[in-house]
Length: 489
Image (cartoon, rainbow, N blue to C red; front, side, top):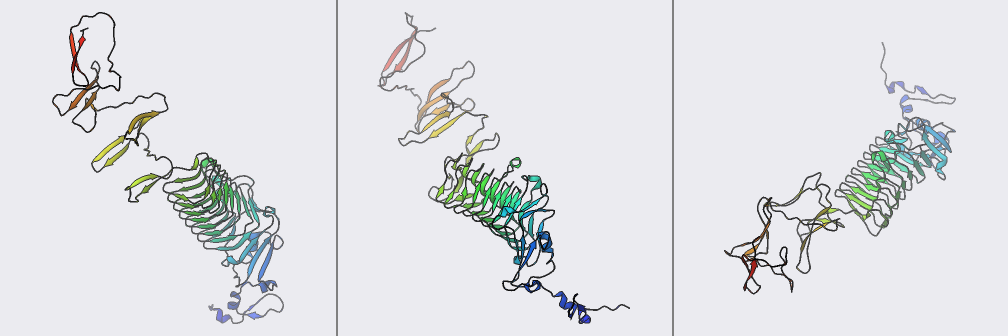
């Protein structure tokens, strides 16, 4: 019969291997922790493990403390010697005391300590996940031999699912699709890091995450095939502090805030980008006091769909489309009533496809702008400071006619708010157009009045003697009637 035994039954039943070992209980053994004393270290409480001298890889050094706790005050430092280390899987930080772990390469010349993969990556390089922590990472260049595309959209340094990483300033990333990324409620502290040649984003805070990357550099982020490329970007309710950072050569935007995110970019420089310097979209915010956005192909600052980019003073010169794009915003300050205002420049109202633009009041449709394909001329109206507002034809041609049309056989009425006025009406084939007097009076003269000494001109004149068949009566300006001889043709 087999008897089930618990830890108390074992009593002093465990003896460590080696001479001089003292018998202990199994329960006591299971409560072991890692301490500096286990490594013969005294003083600062730091355990130093050398790669490749003690362990061939960083993952092997991490595995050596798997299942062991680090006592309070103990720091487990993995010191990596200069060289090139080609990964076959992610460096995965899972230790529950990860905030007491340091992974350090060459903090003077990080390019001497390279972490890479063979070919293009099929996994992230260094990952802290599921609420884990990494106390310190510094002195490495995460490098790929060629630029990763969207088919290899992996990250060099990644904190995901509520995790955090603290980096020193001597981290370089080159050619990874994402350089440094915090995702799903994670945090990364990485001031002064450098990311080059990313695909989608160089430094990326995504889905409720936060990155502190002051004085960082992120250049040449571009995935031309997918129309992506941001140097530093906060997305989906995330936040970034990239004050005094620099972003250049990026396809869409140097420093960006998307989908309800916020970016603090005091003193930042977003210049010489293929797209815009600062880019905000979907109710996001960028605050950029004392910033510079010059020589960008598009705008110094580009705002879309309710986004805000603000700050002063700002240096913005040499941008291909201007210092900032025109935006419309809702204004209800109470002085002029509810209105749509342009931030700067003109205000456009665009309909999609061939659809018209309608203006309505409570009484229904009041004004319509119809579609005309490939329009090169248009109607312009303007006010006046001398009580002469105008309506005119405008466009690229030197001479442009102005066409006023009524609907059906109805005339066009010309006049002020008076009883009598002018009516103009076209005619169908064989019927001449007509100008006539209309109004409330039963009998209305039609008064043609030239200016100054000018005269009213009529039709074609022929010299020579004619036989009159009658006359036409006219009234002069003073109302006197005169008769003009007429001949029937």
